[in-house]
Image (cartoon, rainbow, N blue to C red):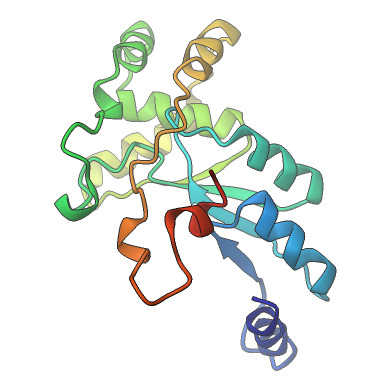
Length: 183
């Protein structure tokens, strides 16, 4: 990790990059990296949605001045079958999210994006449909109430939509425990 980061810093020095960030870094990995950085990561992109809120990681990144970007912010419903558990929940069908959306006459996706925005987290929703792209942008106009934010906070299950098993390949040092630094 340290050698890779030094190479990225060299890319900045050479004018080949302007900003550096990390993806899927846990608190542990960031703590291991920071003492060796000349240029601190500006962003950590991680799976983040109401079922996987990663509160400790978000708080740590915020305290370190590292912005958090959410991938799979809508639950990644269109992810490939090989990364989807047969019993995986569908975040856009959550009764809590749907009821909040109905109360605001908005879509479930807009509620999820507004939730990220209000938490100061940028989100990377996947869409190629012009109407959905417009809806996603309109989510910035939606303000959720404190009670609605609490209802969404109560959905946290630590559930990964993208478990990472495809990275845990035999013969490598990667297991689900070393990828996520979780028990």
